[in-house]
Amino acid sequence: MSKVVLITGGSSGIGKSIGEFLCAKEFIVYGTSRSPHNYPETKFPILALDVKDISTINAAINTVIEKEGRLDVLINNAGAGITGPIEETPEAEIKKNFETNFFGPINVIKAVLPQMRSQKAGLIINITSIAGYMGLPYRGIYSASKGALELITEAFRMELKGFNINMTNVAPGDFATNIAAGRYHAPLLEDSPYREPYGNTLDLMNEHVDAGSDPNEMAKAIFKIINTSKPKVHYKVGEFMQKFSIVLKRILPDKVYEKLLMNHYKL
Image (cartoon, rainbow, N blue to C red):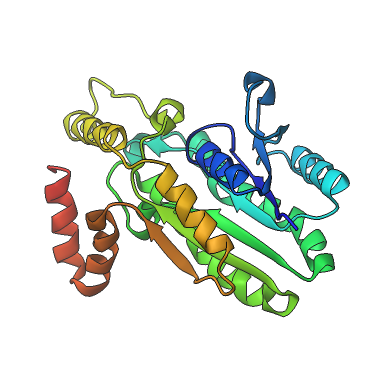
């Protein structure tokens, strides 16, 4: 029996690549978007869902269950980027980012759990980020929101063990997607003390995304995880040095690692 998969943020980028790959493997796939009417030609249905709006979360999940009778895999992929000096990032934008990257996935998880519990089976995959393993300059809010999702998954996993529901994190590095276009950028203020270093770091971040890996690598990794009977707690997908940066953070003294990051970003 084909597994039923729901992918939040499935209309573009990594989510779309995952959905198309799973469709080719004969999964039953549903994606979501805040504006599904913008995507009339897709290989799988796109449902209306805003992770900041619980009513749309419940409506989308109910639609999948009514049509398919079950929901086997949730892929929490919807997310938003944010850059800027923390001092100059508006509080409203910080809260909005956490609503999307942290509270949103939690609300979607809560909404699917009753169905998965009744099935006595389910898999939840949270798409986080390698940036969530370290506090990156001018990406501190993004790092914090993704790091929070990584940690809460660890707790969630233990709470769900008794229901035969698995949960895991998949942390991608830089992939060639349109994420930069939808990212909130704190403006480069002419009189800001951060103007030059922030501007240089912003250019570097955009270069990394433009030269990023093929999103199909993420799709292949997700497919492999779905077919794993006992998923690990954490997975990392990306170029070797991006994944190795996590190892270095674990083994190097804090100030040495901080110096490496500052050198990398030319700070």
